[in-house]
Length: 232
Image 1 (cartoon, rainbow, N blue to C red):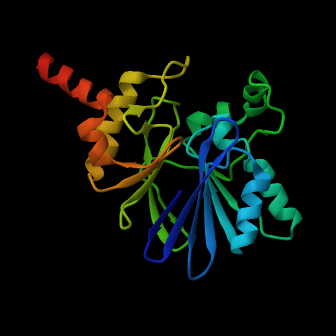
Image 2: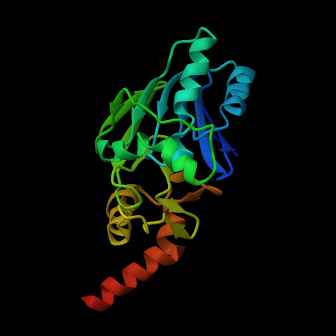
Image 3: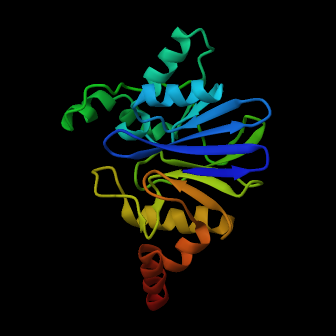
């Protein structure tokens, strides 16, 4: 999957058996790159990075689940072994620390042995503005799927990376002991959708969509709106 904006290229590579969307975003002029959610299949990601001659400056993790963060440590290690600077790792909100530090345990439950716990250089906070690859990405803290889940929004390019918050016609799971479905729906409606119907987003799994399409067609968001109207 490829998405473009003048000066910026986005390639999405599904990784691991979960087919999680790892996004590689780079500036065409400088080849400086950001990797969002390298969940695994590190050699596949490295091959793409090498083939394009990219210089990975930053890794951003939207949340602490194994399929989104399990390849962070391996990617940093392999880049360092190749003599390249280790990218800065920006985590989700600090509430997801317990997940980032238990990826090996998470992976064991699925019979996976090639994923590693992830460490970050800093945690993101709501409304932070990250200056990466010559662009500005706004951090939106959207809890519910996990407590510390974030979205990244490039408001100029009208592009977003939303992890497992929102998908085509559905939303992220909330049936974990730390999940909160009503909070997730409310956070999507109050924090993401008002940013603009025209914003195209890359979800954690599956194909892209827009905030406008999901606002009008996503049954979880529509159902919630209907219930709110009936309650009032």
